[in-house]
Amino acid sequence: MMTTDTQRPRPGAAILRTALRRNIGAMIAGTVLMGLYQAAETAFPIALGLIVEHTMQDRSLGSLGVSIGSLAVIITTVSLSWRFGMRVLQKANTTEAHRWRVQVAACGLQPVARDVDGLKSGEILTIATEDADQTADIIEVVPLLVSSLVAVVVAAVALSLADIRLGLLVIVGTVGILSILAVMSQRIGSSTQEQQAKVARAGAKVADLIIGLRPLHGFGGNHAAFGSYRRVSTDAKRQAITVARVNGAYAGTALALNAVLAAAVSLTAGWLAFGGQISIGELVMAVGLAQFIMEPLKMFSEMPKYVMIARASAERMALVLSAPPVTVPGPERPAPGGDLEVDGVRHGTLRGLKFTVVAGEFVAIAPYQPRAAADLVAVLAVNAAPPAYEGVVRLGGQELADLSVEAVREHLLVNPYDAEIFGGTLRTNIDPSGSSRTLPEAVEASMLTDVVALHRDGLDYAVRDRGANLSGGQRQRLSLARALAADTDVLVLHNPTTAVDAVTEQLIARNIAKLRRGRTTLVITSSPALLDAADRVLVLDEGVITAEDTHRNLLAGDEEYCLAVAR
Image (cartoon, rainbow, N blue to C red):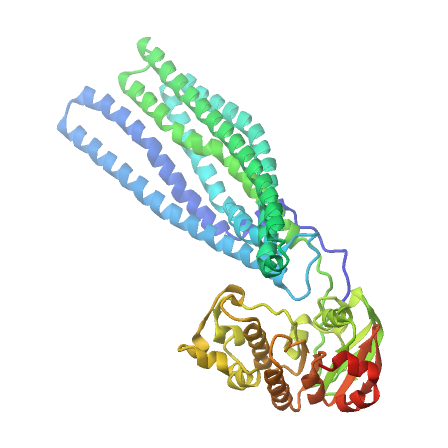
């Protein structure tokens, strides 16, 4: 695994181009159907004008019947083309939004994290939801823009056939409207991007508060924390009001300009009809088109705004998708059931740490400083990637730097003391993939059997988000059961029994030793029960291993150890 600075950036424009390119088929079909819809809509006032023109001349029921039939065909075309066109585009839009959500989530959740320049999980969540959806809107925006242009062109051509001045008025007016609105849409894009950033920060803040709610209540800091969130949320509210004001000004200006153009076409047509330069039928057509053209013009004039919003969202997604990974994984795989070796690791409080856990051995590490334990867990869990520390960690004889992340995760599981509990059931928390072959044994070994027996639904008992309906000890045993059910070659447990009573702790220690017999197990703990169950104990003091023996021998001969672990 090596750091890389050569990854090409992926700006928002490139993300939009990618979205357009992989939906080109759906967009072509949607554009054709929506263009047909707009052409049929435009044909309606044209047909009315022709009906008036020919009915007044021929005054025949046959002509009237043909005219009514023509209107029925136009109305049917309008209905069906809109229905199927929007179905195609919305399906493509939804699918594309799903793709970006998954891609952003994969970047945020991947084992080797990306350098996302200070973005918090709450901000990434907002990017993976709102920004992904708004970016995918470009799939609908382009076909609707083209179809609206079709309507304007058809109207301009029809009016030009009546009088060239009417057609030129529509074309010149449309260009002028779009020129004005294009300038205004840039303000919308910048304001929207700033609003999205502030909303994301507010989301990140509230996510942090929910995670730390219990500790905050413990020392009475919840009111101060709420005040902090309120300030961030108020800032986001002010920006949202600014965006709404800009959007309102944009929409009002667009509507006013469109109305002015429609009025200009109607008045010009009336003046031409009054002067006998166009017929009554052509006047009816022109007035009808002037009224109708407001809809495609409105849609046409709104498209720049949606393009800018999609561009702003794409730029925010690029913050995650373009961020370089902390490391580039290697291609190798470790030997199954291999040793775990830490050789000269310097990271945080670790000072050239060295030790080896032989395949099949149960080893406990007794850390005198909690920070050193946390630093060791970070290294073994690859939360601190190999370039971030000195020294080497080997798994199955292969350096972590040479292994793929998937291979590391497959052979080595590090279960932190604060592992998350997810909304679902006991079963889905213990065995998320539904493929564990040791689930019953893991439940029994972790002493979770009493929790299962306590509820009528057993393992299907519903668990609330973050295990809110479980006690601290139950959440910890549930996390331990999940780690044991994974049944990996190498298992690292960090303080797995700090929230359970002494009797339960004794039983769990024996059960882990029994269940993991023949598998490599490393427990980082100060629990006497777990230390006693281990084959040997390593004392971690000031970042290095200072002693090594069985728990009982260390108790008998090391007074400092006795004071550190005795309860």
